[in-house]
Structures are given as C-alpha cells and as structure tokens.
Length: 390
Image (cartoon, rainbow, N blue to C red; front, side, top):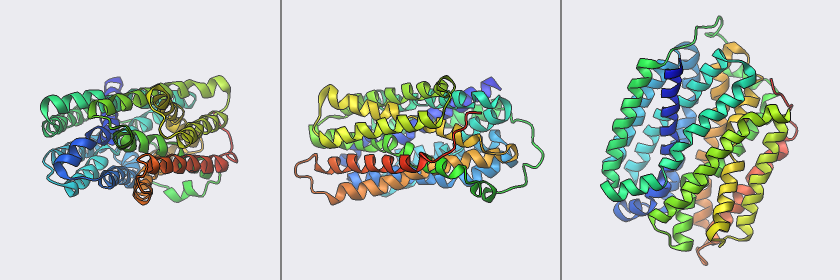
C-alpha cells in the first residue's frame, strides 16, 4: 500500500508540473510556434477543463473499478500521449490538443490517493495526509521552474517533452504494479451525485473550492511568466527563478495548512483567514503592479503560501460525504476546484487582452484586481458554512 501511494504521489508531482510548465515555456513557444499570451492562457485553461470534466467518470471509476486501473490507464494513455503530442507540436492548435490529453491523463491521480486515504485511514488525519500529498506533489511546481528552464536550454524544449512522455509512461506502469485497491464497500454501486448536491452543508464549501485555488494556479501556471517578461523584460531563466519562489511557497503552504485544523480546532477559520490573506497580497500587487525585486517576489510567494488551502477545503467537504459515495464525493469537490482555474484562464485571457498594454503593467494590474475580487466574493459565501473537523 505504501509503495502504491508513493507511485500516486509521484504521478501527482507530474500533474503539478504539467499544470505549471507553460509559464517557463512562454518565450520559446511565442518565438518558435507563434503562440500568443491568449493562446497559452487557452491552453492552460484547456488542461484544467479537461481535468475537471474527467472528475465525473473518475469518481464513478474509483467507486466501481478502483484507483489502480483508473490511474494507470488514464495516466499512461493521456499523460504520456499528450506529452508526446506536445513535443511534436507545430502550432498553437497542437498545444491545445496536447494540454487536453495531459489534463485527462492527470485527472485521477490525486483523487485516487484521497480515495485510499478516506477508505483506509482515520478521518481525523485525512486533512494532514491530503495536504502532505499536495505539498510533496508541489515539487512538480519547482521542477517546472528553474530545472525546466535549464533542461530546455541544455537539450531543447521538444527533447525535454519527449523525455517527460517516457517518465510519465513509466510512472503509469509502476502504478499498475504497486497500487492496491481498498476493499469494495456495500452500496458503492448505488447512489449518485444528486445525493451530494442535495446536501446544503456542501454548497458553501463548493463555493470556496471554486475560489481558493484559481488565483494561485492561474498566476503560477501562466501569468507570472508573461508578467515578468512584459513588465521587466525577464528571460526564461529569470522567470524560472520567480516561479521557483512561488512554487516553494505553495509547497510550504500545503504542509502548513495540514496540521493547523487540529491545532486551531477549526477548519472554517483556518481556510477563511488564509484566503483573505491571499486576497490582501493580490490587492498589494494591484496597488503596486511594478513592484520588482524582493517585494514583488514576496507578494507572489504570499499568494502561493496562503492560497494553498485546496486540500484543507477538500477535507472540510469530505467530512459531510457518506462512505459509499466517497469516490464521487472527493471528485465532485475536486471538479469545482479544478474547473474554476480552467474557466478563469479563459476569463483572465480576455481581461488581459481587453486592457491596452500602455504602460505594460496595465493588463496585469487588471488581472490582480480581478483575482482579488474573485477570492473576496467566495469568502463572503464561505463565511456562512458549517465548521466541521471530524
């Protein structure tokens, strides 16, 4: 079981990498393929939307088939196949198709581990285990920063993607060999998502799922790259350093959130406070959009640190889900959390394109305000949620 979970965590490292690596590839994709910032925003959004829409069949498969086959087949076919298509891309359209395939491939791996935790471990430690997986998996964010920039400069971006396709296929094979499915539970074939959606206690948590991850994911996964390139003329390596700082902050935030619900005796207060601090960092960037050096990096780090409440929000929602609907429950929560960044990438692409780049920071000033108001609106709804700490 431990070896299987380790393989799923490694797969989640790849998932985090794939959702964030476009920021570093921005300069080379613009130069070689003629991709615009809006094209790359759409590609990032396609990844999230494909990932999100897959949560419904994945939830059914976890309850009916089990995490081993579900993860192995999708990661091998979609993840490795999409990386291969990306490496052979000749234009923005191929990048869109590749990101959709990769999103499908990555869709089951985090929920497979959460399903095993929910079925095999005490509910009291679910939040800590869930946060630990996200924290370790966020190393993929780090791999998608400076190390990726080095690899692209040393070997070329196509060769790097071909190597990633091989690694992804190898991890999928290891999942098939080592993951062990929990025993089936009576009634797991029954029930539906409508039972979950009819639970009033879930809805404020679902709204928080919509807002808690999208700003950090959108900035780290895409906009931090064009922002530094357009406003400060940063190179790929310099962008890699900025994304590394934000990625490390997201890792630290995931681990920090994990045990705090038990230490503070509240999940609602922890989640609400953290997201309000993330909004404050965004407001600071809106007020001072040309903040460079350590000031800008610290504000992006703050967004990553405080915006890492995603696993804790899932833990809050999971506490209301009955055991026989656990697969569909955690994937429903994940759908709201992942669909939102996908839709927001399209929305922020439109915001960016609608604001004249004079001065060059103007479109990003609008983006920072947009993300801040988005979080604050969600926090206003979540304030009425019912606290539950198992």
